[in-house]
Image (tube, rainbow, N blue to C red; front, side, top):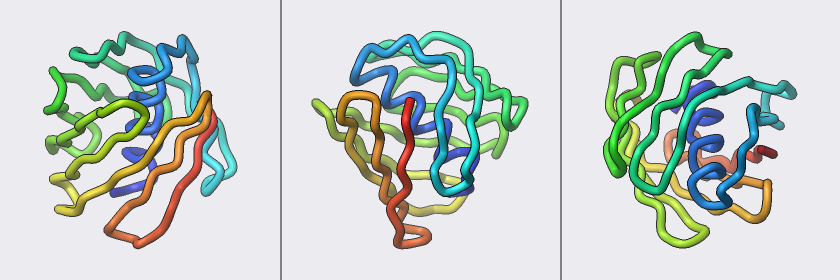
Length: 116
């Protein structure tokens, strides 16, 4: 999964799990803030990603990432999440604790951390 899509997923899961009203995510791997706007519930997602200038939207568990022009499956269960990125054709998983998100990407075999 590319870094922009990872940040977008981190933002979406933080909003869905913690009911945060945040407007950005800090991506520690890129050392930058990424701004977002839109609505996230436990069922529906309609988010605009200012970093990539595109939408990511859909009904969970299936989202469409307009930046990559591919679907992303995203399952949220309590404070944990998992999914499949059709762009990279790899799985990902992670957890949310407060305003912190940890995402493990099977494409890179690395953890990525965000604050939302």
